[in-house]
Image 1 (cartoon, rainbow, N blue to C red):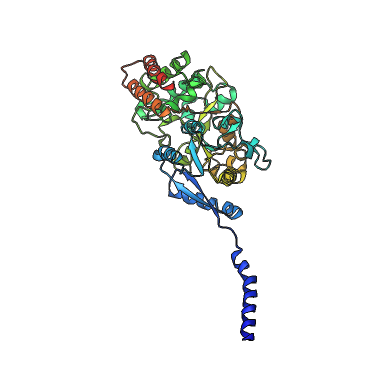
Image 2: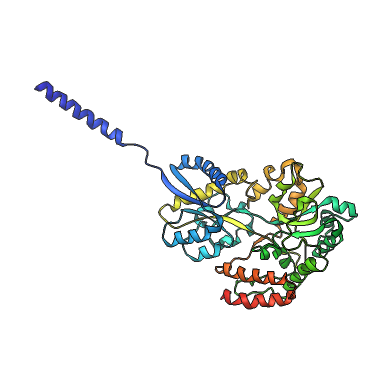
Amino acid sequence: MKKLLSLMLCLTILLGLTVPLTTVSASAPTTIKLSIWGNDARKTTFEELVKPFEEANNAKVEVVLVPFAEYMQKISIQLASRTAPDVIWLAEKMIPQFIASGELIDLAPYVKSDAEYDFADFFPTTLTLFTQNDTVYGIPFSFGPRVIFYNKTLFLEKGLKTPTELFKEGNWTLEEFYKSAKELTDPSKGIYGMKLQGATEPTAYTNSLYDIVLANDADYFNSEMTEFTLDSPGGIKSMQEFYDALFVDESHVKPGDQTQFETGKIALARDTFSYAANLRGGKVDFEWDIIGAPKGPKADAKITTGFAGYHVVKGPNEELAVELVKYLTSKEISTKLVSTFPSPRRSVLNSDEFLNQPEGLPCVESVKLAFVDAIEDPGVVSYPAHENYQKIEVEINKLFEMMFTKEYTPEQIVKMMKEKVDPLLK
């Protein structure tokens, strides 16, 4: 009996010693959700990208892929039902509505005082859309100022100065842009002088002409986004120049014509910087280069661009979500992704990884002149954005298409736009 009692006592002591050891273990990872758009390959990329963050923070990041066409509506519903992901991507036209919702946290206390994060590394004008006063509602990770791709071979064959030569002389202006396009147009060979990306495609009309509108000292809206202002002299001039390029000298690709720059049949094409990938690897049989947007009457007009940014939704995991945003927009990760997402960080765009493009096309000098230097000065501005912009854009697009019928003058179209759009801004 004594032996049995002794055995039981020993077991009790042992259990007392061992049970706490079996219950002390690392806490379960905290799961946060990151919402993105794109395809399965992009989802896989981000799942791999966040693994070091997960390990360092005892976290699990669930990457949620949502089709872009459904994105805004789905996130809006999730915010209303308190089921939104912790971190969300937003594009420029979505941002005002989501800021107005009051569901995004202020990132300023987390990013401005973090010396290692280096918030000052961002080009100042890339932050304008994401901030109100001193509140930082998001961090941009990608943007796409357009550049002008030009067929150098066509310029040389015609004996014309190239846009780069004109730029270095201080003469790369809207007047020279339209003049070159007209001189290089050759209907007998099917060659167009110019193509503004999206200018003849539904849903992209406003964006495609925005650089030209600003260069002509005009804008679609006033700074408060309370009035449609394209009916100014500069705005009407911009529309008339575009109309003339389409239907008078016929230097611009026609609505519905799918001719692309890589065919060699377009002399000047406004497109995203990443479009260069379509021209490398022996895909074209002509020389090409890039240059920035031509100057107009307003010489310091900013370059227009779309944006995508990270935003943190109010919720129980805000601090971990903020750390994820800081990780994904850090210099290191931004450099890794720069070939896909041009970074709004100075250090990244001035890095060898970005300046030295594949095959040296375009060359470092052209990348600096056409892209990096323009972002620094005059800077960039977002495409128009408003809480009610979806309805506004529908009305504007309808009237662009009416102009393409040639039954109305550009001035008449602009005045009709104002009648339709002003009530939607109230």
